[in-house]
Image (tube, rainbow, N blue to C red):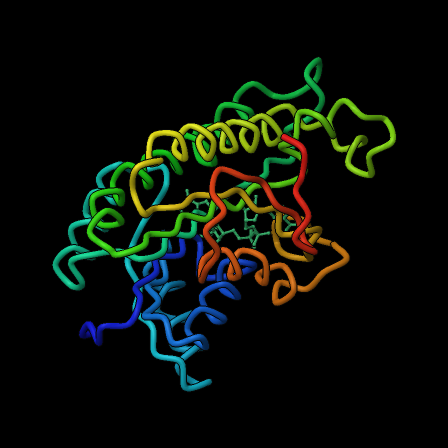
Length: 242
Ligand code: NAP
């Protein structure tokens, strides 16, 4: 995609689920969207699906578990656009062998934290020079209410029963990335926030009360604007306790 001067966004995990909807809504808003996907065929299919709707996007291969793919993706974006206005860290996994602390499979916990936290940190580090090259960079970390330390310890919370040590810790760590990055970038024009998309029916959950289209709305809102930074929001725009 030749750069046309409008904002450039990378959405990781954009071949399906909430990520694909974020890509669609950003493209509808006139943003040049780069769909991050770890599989070339799935990436092509998603770009083709959006093209049927008249939305022209491109794709880059990016696997959160492969530092080489992340570095290569940053090089590709640098060569094609020279900057990145919006980074939506959406890609993530859940592992069915995850469970409360006494029962969780250690390999599942390791895998989930490796992808959801270390992988997202690696993407963010690789893309930061490109975000710094944009006039007003926006980083949206797609977190979860399950990453809230406060809600995990609140028997009155609707999320209290979902005690998955790997997944929930991965999102709590992602929230720490939001806070620390916000502090580190205080003197720049880049803002960074965590957003919880809601309980969305996707392949990750198998069920949920919201559609991916609805789940994409908050991440898109923070991708497109607002000067708030270093905060954690839930659908409806209220703040989620850390
Ligand atoms: P999904 O439909 O399973 O989509 C996940 C996306 O992440 C897919 O594109 C997947 O690619 C990609 N992905 C997984 N591992 C990857 C890796 N190593 N490298 C690159 N991409 C990878 O799940 P979703 O529900 O849309 O989830 C999107 C985000 O929202 C996740 O971060 C999730 O934790 C968060 N979230 C979801 C809910 C919910 O209710 N659904 C609630 C709170 C937060 P493949 O197709 O190749 O697997």
